[in-house]
Structures are given as C-alpha cells and as structure tokens.
Image (cartoon, rainbow, N blue to C red; front, side, top):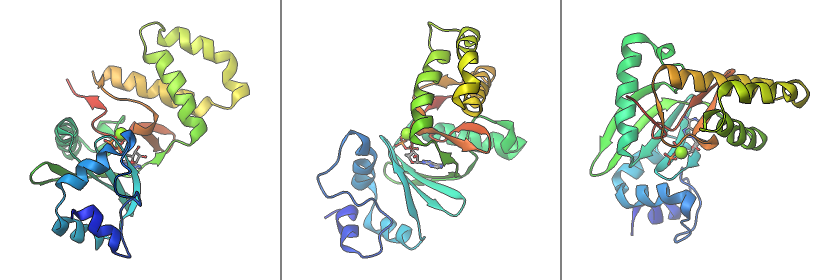
Length: 208
Ligand SMILES: Nc1ncnc2c1ncn2[C@@H]1O[C@H](COP(=O)(O)OP(=O)(O)O)[C@@H](O)[C@H]1O
Ligand SMILES: [Mg+2]
C-alpha cells in the first residue's frame, strides 16, 4: 500500500480526495507524487495543516498561509526554481516581475522536490478563457502584439477586460525583455499578484 492509499484511511488528510485508480490526464502529478513520496514524508506533511491548491501534470500544490508548497517531479521546474531563488536573494523579488517568489527548495529522494513559493490568486473561469484566447493571439506567430492590441482596443472598454488585457501584455513584454521561453504557459499556470499576472508553475518557462 502506498502513502496515498494509506492517507485516505486517515481522517485529517491534506490530500486530494480522488479514489484510487481515478487518475486522469490532469492528475498525472498526483500519480507521480504517489509513486515517489514515502509514507514517512507524507506523515510529516500531514502535520503541517496544508490545504490543497491544485494538481497538475507534474505535481501537487498545497497552501500554508501565504505560501504555496509544491511537490514536483519536473527537473526543469527544479532548475528554474534554483535560478529564480538565487536571483531574488541577490536582487529582491521585484527583480523578476513575471514569476512567483521562490523561498526554498528541498530534494526528497529519489525523484521529488519540495519547493516553497509565493501564493498567488488563480484566474477564474472567465479570466481563464480570456487568457487562452488573448495570450494565444499576442504570443503566436500570426499576430504581432501591436495588431492584436489594436484589434482588442475597440472591445477593451465595453467588455471590462482592461485589467487582464493590460496584465497579459505586460507579462508578454516582460518575458520578451528577459528572454524567457514559453514551455507551457496557459491559464492554470499563471495567477494574480495584485494587478499583475505572474507565472506560478515554474516548469512552464525556460531561462536562457
Ligand atoms: N503559487 C501558487 N499559488 C496559487 N495556486 C497555485 C500555486 N501553485 C500551484 N497552484 C495551483 O495548483 C495547480 C497545479 O500547480 P502547478 O504548479 O501548475 O502543477 P504542475 O506542474 O503539475 O502543472 C495550479 O494550476 C494552480 O491552480
Ligand atoms: Mg501547471
């Protein structure tokens, strides 16, 4: 029996309540963490009073106060987390305005990393749909930022999407300025920090 099955038996569990065998594409992260997290580590985590933020293709995220705790199997995510943490230690969180703050990284052998990052506010369903469309328009090959902007300009005021339009443009410009590659930028991987959109899934980008 693995840690996940055992934890379902426990009353107070910080884990998603999926039934065994119910893994789907969107819960591969759960399957991987289930495979690699020992019962001992899971027991330690269950004492931390965590609540679930979400599950993705590479891991699971919980919240603890203002911090998000991510267990991940993604090597790119670990590499990026290290780069970001070092830069932010040196220059402050505002040095990389397009990404969440990274507070700590701990390896959990054999294949997991525990990353503590800044918690941000996920997009709601309307914002998600808008992001998928508008980010695609301005980051894709067929539309320049300028043409998409002017196409949108007419709709901005009447649709009430001014805030997210401004934030997506700012995010795109920022990624360009810092030479960051888009590996997997889509709406579940970004969140609000005040009026700014930042990347919350550190496996979604690549540093030069
Ligand atoms: N820092 C965070 N703040 C708020 N929500 C988060 C944070 N990190 C993750 N989440 C939530 O958990 C989900 C899965 O996390 P994510 O890092 O995207 O995992 P994966 O690498 O498996 O795709 C996200 O889509 C988001 O809803
Ligand atoms: Mg993700």
